[in-house]
Length: 255
Image 1: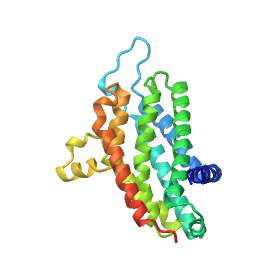
Image 2: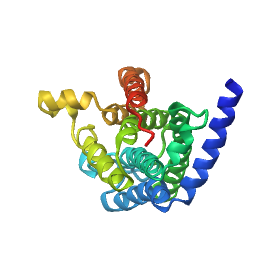
Image 3: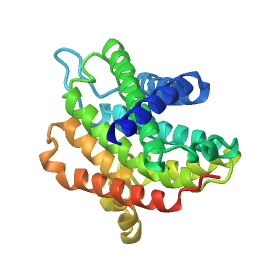
Image 4: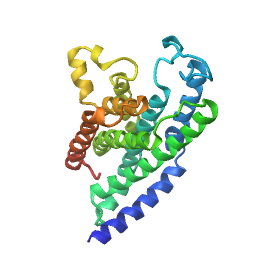
């Protein structure tokens, strides 16, 4: 049984990888857009990286950490692609046909997650190559740790995408609904201003959102404080993933 599950999982993952690579909007939104965002804003706002012998003052730094912003955009792009593809499959009757197979919702969503995480690593790699070539020194962080933090954050945000993908009625509504849910989360993530400055109610909402903890963990890796100083954020990302995944298995609609 386990062998059959793995065979179905890997076969479906391979199929979904080919579908994703052929989908222009998913490919562009997950790889091209974050890299362009990082490069264009980096040139316009600066990267906060000193040249040899120079000293950076607070006014020389960009208003946000552009690498973390681009990384979160990568994660959100992966979620939007997940929601859109599942909605297309539901509307086209593909999920209904898959229901007749031994594949469970967990297997189907798991295959999509594997593909999205793989392309997240590719997207981050492209961004790092662009950053190192155009902004020497900007990516002088522990890339293994940063990638791990991004993958955990993406996984947690994807679990919210599970819920949206499980209930969104048609493909036409998939992108607008996911955008309305996901992009406002950026405003509460602490990326643009400290979460501590939010009103109490908004601060409580921000603490329940995966983007807030993803940004905090990525920032911790970026500034050198590391995972140990942000174990609460890492734990919350795992907890949010488990909660939304459990909810999605209950509300998942095949048709």
